[in-house]
Length: 84
Image 1 (cartoon, rainbow, N blue to C red):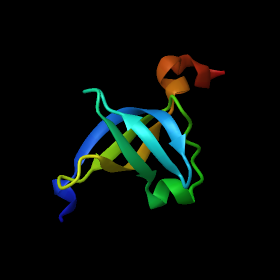
Image 2: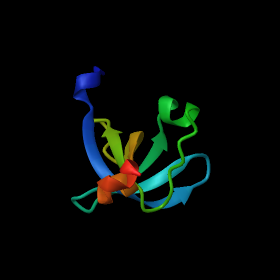
Image 3: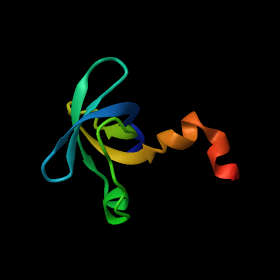
Image 4: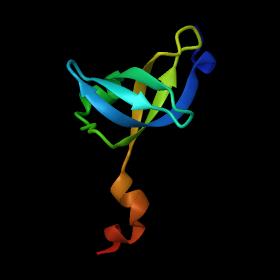
């Protein structure tokens, strides 16, 4: 499978599962099981319930995905927080 076949979607983490797996709710209401990608896992990025994440889904199985990015919600809500 080529990398351009993958489907990118943003969602919100609704549940943390054992083994760095998460339940992520997509904007259309679907809930997928996602694991952390190697780059995210190696950099020890904390993913918590309520975080907004970017998930890559395989076109063959839309119920499983890989978390490739965690959006910093605090900076998105209050952009002037960095200017102190």
